[in-house]
Amino acid sequence: MPVTIHPVLTKADQHLFYDLAWRVYQKDPCWVPALWPQRKDYLNKKTTFFSYGEGDFWLAKRGSEVVGTIGAAVDHPRNHHLGRQSCLFGFFEVLEDDYEAASALWDQACIWAKTHHLTELVGPYSFAANEDTGFLVEGFQYPPTIMMGHNPPYYPQFAEKYGFQKSAEWLAYRYDLKTINFDVQNGPGILFRIAQRSRQRLGQSSIRHPDMRRWDEEIHRLHTVYNTSLADLPDFFPIELVEFNAQAIALKPILDPELVFIAEVDGKVVGFSLGLPNLMEALKEAHGLRDPWDYLRFAQARRKITGVSFKILAIDPQYWGYGLESQMFLEMAKTVIRKGYTWIDGSLTGDTNPQTNKLATRLGAYVYRRYWEFKLVF
Image 1 (tube, helix red, strand yellow):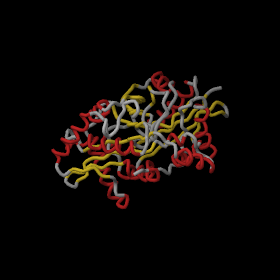
Image 2 (tube, helix red, strand yellow):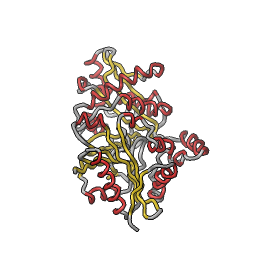
Image 3 (cartoon, rainbow, N blue to C red):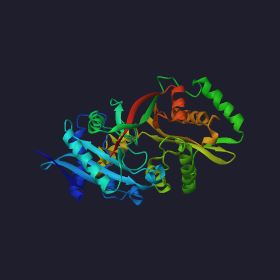
Image 4 (cartoon, rainbow, N blue to C red):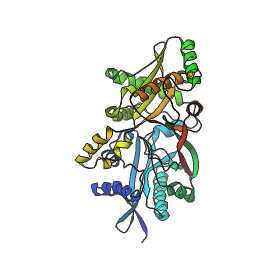
């Protein structure tokens, strides 16, 4: 039967949109379902993104059977900063061997983009910055960590067949602590030497944890450092404070302040690193939190988490080369080992990020998942 495209308008449509992924990944042991409460907020356009952007969602059907999903959106601040007219696509799912459905979904996204006077289709992204960035092209044997996407191998193949071109590459690093035999006394000697020189060169420098009693002030400081630290990278666009704050609030219930490290020089915040317990290990057992008893499964599985995911290492460019990253890494190592974690994820970083990639490889990490962003110019 031919593929038809239908907008997501009703609660029944939303459930169909969400449920398709369970069919796509039914034989994939690494897949972790998206949380139903969060996905529902997106489909109802109640997330922070829709305070500064706009978008819509569609189902692809053959008769009454759903065979694909997609969302298309425009991030107005992003386009303004980059001087582009980009349409983002995301929430893309399609059954295996159904390129026709994939093509029809991208056709719909292109139509939506053109009606909004946009000139290119870019993705996949789940619209907000740092969420489900790119199609996975390497590392399918590993489950994703928190804030990291997952997809079948045929998605990037479908994208290239449709005419998309690779436009960016994103890397996830893994540190197996037992393999590299890392402990606070048995780490790479160069790391200790760099950290020691850093403390001597910078004088009044320190690494601290966030003051949770002054949440708003801390978030404002970290937002400034985040945008400043990445401003020189190709195609970087500043994250809006409202989005940065919304993501921080969403993470607050799972945040372990001991895994957040803030670098100060002469009392000024100049860098930070954000670590999160890898809740995807627990969420895999929680079935998307669709039912009340799933929360109990999640609570039980949460006690057995083995990994920690470091999502951000941001340093003001004025302090690059001073070894602050080594100071923070040593503090991270002490905490991770003390808390009993056995492996560390570092994700995601662009392949053009010189500081993070250099530090990761120097410390014995390896790339274990690789993502590509795709672009189609009309």
